[in-house]
Image (cartoon, rainbow over all chains, first blue to last red; front, top):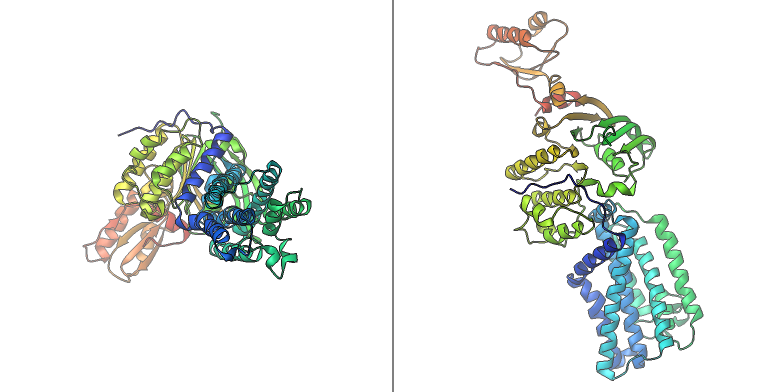
Length: 249
Length: 300
């Protein structure tokens, strides 16, 4: 029988390694989850293909269809998937347990953000490759790409904050329902599945985080207002999450 | 670190919604010892553990864990924890969980060794699909990975079958031999009576008994069975005012007080004279009986 030698003790692994290991662990778990894959990959791809190949896209250009699908991927990953995963991890005591390890609360938040960025990067690559395969078009303007990346980063911040707020304040089942409901509302009313300017509430849609994200990713010039709107959503979400998030259910 | 207690709590008060669930609790656990926390549900055991883990800030009192404040990040690699409920990702396999938690430490126990020791190698199902006892073994594996100096185990043997319990207690003996301090809660007092250095009984948020198991067992009542509904006054006269005798259920009597050899002989003689002669005085005292007596429960 093996004797476990505890006498040496152990120091924590370096902080960066802890965060990366946690992010990879969470990413593997997310990619093994069929419902999560449907939400984060299948639905954005379906919206992209429908937008590029059928009239259901509302007469969008190839670039607009890609932006809508990319925005949907960001929403699905950084908000809906994050909220549901965090809500159930909280219910099962996983957050509490990880908070007791050297990873700690900050490390866990960093890892969860990194998971979103890793998955979103893969989603965007798949969506761009698919757009190219179906239309022969790829984004090439460096300034627009840079602005799109900035908008996505701001959106990930805001969506993650709101996801944590919901997951940290509501029961897991309520989080599941609310996160999916908000996903559907923002998908159809926030300028993702159909162009915002074709909606009767287009003036309102631009103030939503998804409306601002699509606008910032679409415009050739610097999109000051959409970027400011994204910052506003991120700031308010962070303040509320800091106030109301609870690690324990 | 030699003189520093593993756990040093004084005058701890924790309240929820104005109600004190831990009330001026004092607890000191020397390093390298095994301490068992007993108490009815709601007595304040888990709240005390949560304070030790830094999950709950006390409303009053001093708390030092391995010489540090409970929320000190340095403790996170020195404490191993088995939480009573949940704590591990339910969709991952035991191997994935153990390997992942090991990766958070610079020099963890080799995951394969821990898995081997706890019989986890053959479990390739998701954690949520394991039995309660199997889940407890995975939790224990995770708790040991950091080679902790203090183990906090909240109901660690819940759901384990007898074979798994035996492995668990053997492992705990081995851990104690290496100078690791263990604080555990359990609802099986007799299981720990031969292994604990210290037993602490908490009731209504405060310590009502604290000492070696043998000392607490001395406080257990003595039982005897005899004919039903006997007039106990003559036995009270024999034993004296320092002893109390109660018929707890028909034909089953409890004697409280410092019962020694002389009293047992006197009870035996009295039983022989008043009963049918078939029953004997039970002098088997257990920690469970002592605990139930202290907390106002009955032994069955």
